[in-house]
View (cartoon, rainbow, N blue to C red):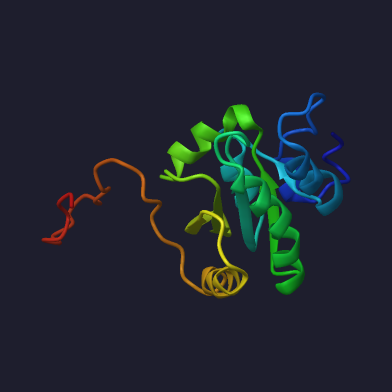
Length: 166
C-alpha cells in the first residue's frame, strides 16, 4: 500500500487481503465502492480520518444471511446520501473483536462514526424507509459512548451523582 498517494483514511486501513476474507457481496463493497478493510487495530484510526464513517459487521453468512442483504443495500444508501459518508468492511475473522469494542451484539450491524468518535449503530436488516430515516438521524446526531460493557469513566473530581453503573 502506498500511503503517500492515498487519502489519510485509507492509509490507516488494512491492505486488500490476498484471500477472500468475506462473502462476495462484502468483497464487492471493497472492490466496487471503495470500502476500506479495517479490523480491531485499525478501525479507530480509520474512523478518525474525518467526517462520517460507516463500518459494516455482516456476520457469518450461514448464520446471518441478512448480512448479505445489508451489504447489497449499503451502496444504495451511499447513493441516497451522496458524499455524506465513507464505508469500511471487516474481515470475517475480525468481526467479533470489532463488535466487542463497540458493544454490538446483533448481526448484521452498521456502526456509525464521526471524526473518530462513535455515534450509533443500526442493527439488523431494515425496511428501506427505516434505513433512510435511521441513516439520516445517524448523520445528524452527536457522538455518543459505545454501548460496551464496563464501568463508566468518570473524570477525577467529578461530583455528578449520576456516575453509578446502570
